[in-house]
Image (cartoon, rainbow, N blue to C red; front, side, top):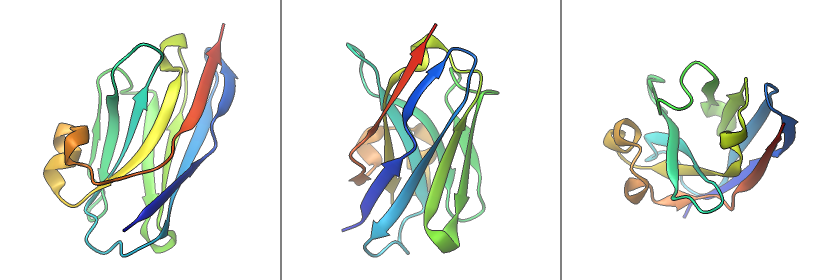
Length: 127
């Protein structure tokens, strides 16, 4: 079992920035090949935001966040970060960190392929 803990959520104005962090706080992480961020806004379905391969660092972004969000990782610290710039009102959501065993999970950003999930952190964007 891998425990994922998110932090860094909060409020920002449209056009502003926030940085989310995700720590793999416990558990056996060597089989984790993909880390991802998902979000779910009010009244919306869960959406894959971005994934990063833990080996090699290839990244896969949803079109809605390309050019604005950046994912990064620090394998030694078992941390994944999501830098969110140029925030829009529609970015407001609960953001979840997730982990998967296979590379395809990252390419597809399919939540059903992710096996471990954090508790979520709220991001609010105001005009």
